[in-house]
Image 1 (cartoon, rainbow, N blue to C red):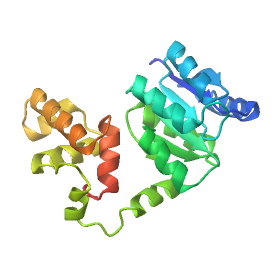
Image 2 (tube, rainbow, N blue to C red):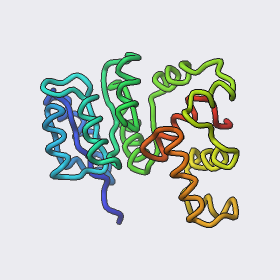
Image 3 (tube, helix red, strand yellow):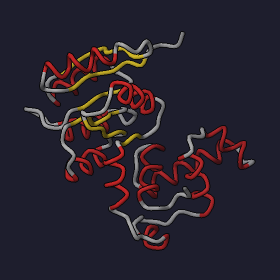
Length: 218
């Protein structure tokens, strides 16, 4: 059996943490390994436990969820953080994603939806609740490819766009190399260029940004 996905719960309400723990531990492949009641404590606990996924509330005392997400992603660029909040607000959505969160869900999701989100983000994918995804995409409604490219500091080449499309489909570097008949090292170099040009930390964030800019084929 594969190791369970290790989850850290960050919320200032004990009752909410207890409820989340109960829901997640119904799943045999998920394990809650720690809790924190504010963002500052979350950074400390993360350093000790190195969980696979963090479920992060937004409004908390001492240090809020956006600041904690930013701190974690700066210190551990591979941190997988899902913002889980009651606040369906543009300000929090975009601040959370800019800070490096790989998921943004509202607390009205079902236990099954939450477990699916944890698995997806642990696997390197981004996940947004439908209402949040619509809001992100609407920010770029009406942008044509030329305007979308103009939103980047440096435009992507045709090959980089092709590779970014495959990244968004969930393909790994070896799979992309086989699909395009390229050396794996060449693909790795292209991916590095893509991250630099899109000003993103990882493949998931690059694919999400490209999608919001309308650069990917549906």
